[in-house]
Length: 596
Image (cartoon, rainbow, N blue to C red; front, side, top):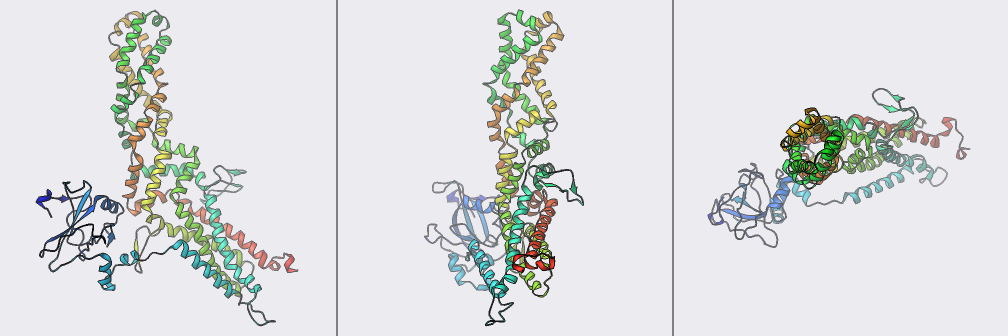
């Protein structure tokens, strides 16, 4: 696999190591325009080489497609499971791009030519063509096909329903009365399914705050639903959900140590270097006037300035040493859970936005599936209504439709967790098939809404472990005072005494506390760049197994899914009862204009 004339080649361990798989030989094909040259097969065991862009290989590897039976890299088709396939890296040469790799295939004995993938499929036995290859050639525009098929189904059912009660007095043909009695049932069931799902999703997220009376009065049995008002389920459980989110995030994705460990103390010192002289001058002058009002005023101005200059000269080192010490003691100085929880409790819309953006397509599916499933459940309801025309059938079926559409939708979204082959098709929860896409969205939401440098710095200053952080600040400010003011300290001790010196040093530390917000604000831009949380979280989310990914996001609201389901069932019962009022008012003792 090495050509001395090209400087040799070595394996790319991140993409492949040696052989890849043990199934049938792979197929390599050049593009139709022959822009990539292939060597002719010289003898058994010779090599055909093709240059592929490293970007294409990396992209496919990140999409976890190297394990599939076949895929297209844009310039060729590759079956990575060939026993003869290797991926090699070419050192850059005169004619080689730095970002190129070579795909090498050792020809089996008797192998002669390399085929274009289209020709290969044409010549192959249909039984040997993989399902992925067939699917690659079939493109169905489901957003158009699905509603079209549904419209045709609705029309056929509506026409058929008009024949259930035919016109006995006329020609015995279909009647509008029959359609109104029976054909309207599936349509109304579809509306119930869609409407209840839409309302249930809205009630999951809104209103952000409780609206109603007696917020403490709630339904028991673990449901925790208010009796005399409503608050969105997600905002209502914001504290619990935020707490669980942090626990799962720090276990699987990133730790507090790693977050703050990305800050370079020397860089922090450089960021505040231009600001520190002004701050130190103000801090020492103010502390001197406050702690030593008489002695400070009687000190010669030159002596005061020399003390300030001495401390100012090494002022950036205060922040450098403080950040280094903070990284070693971050667990005692910063509470990530408190930071995130308080942020989400105070800004409940942020939590809503994370769920709504990550699950945008899934929520669309829940709404749309409510209509489709509702209609098909309605056909069953219509068949029951033909034989049993009791008013309670309609609200009962409404409960069933509202409940079942939500249950089925949630199951389809998250189950099965691992991809399974059923009847030749790969089946997996819709949310899990979007792991790559959702990882990007979730990481961006967390990095921009929860764990920004500004929020972290603010929590460091105002969080429950603030005192431990300030103790570290005092330690390094006091040490700087001792080191840089050592020349003047004997004179201070002789004139004002040791106790006054300690008071002066303590006051300097306290005044420095008031400057921390300004210093932290100064380093925010650098800290945001250094943290780089979005890229880190994206890559780690994408590398999680399907089960780990499902637990990370689904577990946060899994226990509250029953509320969404029950809301759908309750709304279905209400609509079903209204349908019964219209269909069978006489059974309910109600007199309506069209029944008189």
